Image (cartoon, rainbow, N blue to C red; front, side, top):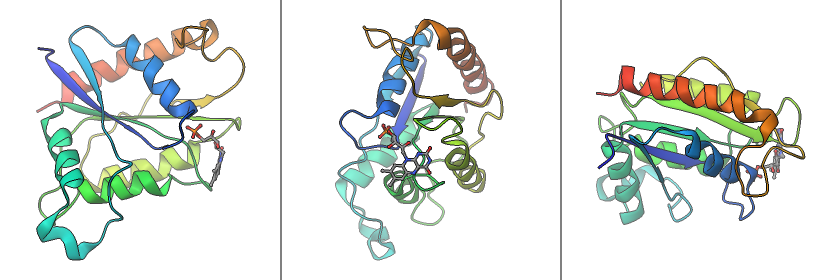
Length: 183
Ligand SMILES: Cc1cc2nc3c(=O)[nH]c(=O)nc-3n(C[C@H](O)[C@H](O)[C@H](O)COP(=O)(O)O)c2cc1C
């Protein structure tokens, strides 16, 4: 079994999501001792505090996957200068009930891709704010605001030549961050 299991949370439900493609390509840059589990968030109900004492099965599944992971990798688009609601919904679910926050202590990394040149910077900053409150130690540098343009991915879906070194360095730093902070 791999020593480090990473839960990957994608902030887009779109079938052809650039962020999902980015996540698929980036995890290939991880070392053999890391495995990446893409968690499902599209079947979570809308968060309702009334359900805290009786969480739905998809919520329990999400919480178990987060709790059993040694690290979290968020890959998210920016919606209206913040994180998409589907991502916030998942984060809220796994943070509750009060005192049973699954994110606490989980080393996190944040990536985002947008068709806009500065896209995802605001979304990532909002996400970092939330993760700070949830006590998830989040890698500060390098930041990665990925601009989606021709050549970002090669024909096989890997990171294209122009961005490969940057994202390999990002992954190397993330791996070190997880090793340093994993419980
Ligand atoms: C509701 C909505 C709001 C958006 N707001 C932003 C934004 O604030 N900043 C940005 O760079 N792109 C914005 N976009 C464009 C997204 O970057 C683009 O749709 C991107 O492809 C979404 O990521 P995905 O391909 O992973 O689904 C927005 C798109 C939608 C649908």
